Length: 123
Image (tube, rainbow, N blue to C red; front, side, top):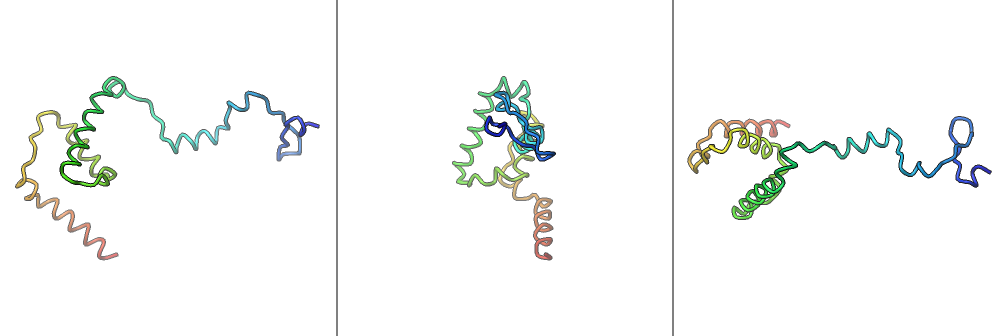
């Protein structure tokens, strides 16, 4: 009779439990925890909430630079891209733009990249 009214039998002893209208709005804690980990929910900080227009404008400048340089958008997914943005942001507005020769003469980065390639060749 309970099954006919929408009851669900539990795995513990065949006892039935009734589901009410509030069950549609309540989730099991395990399901909620897994979903929250998947979505990585976080609260906005005050700067993000107040500066949405400024963030949109900066993203527009970054996108414009990618389009003008003819660079595909895939590098945005790299960890080094995020590290670069954090470094530029932490330096502040007075960071001088690197010139062509400064970027070409970074021997440290060249050695780092060669080390990465040597590690790949050994595998």
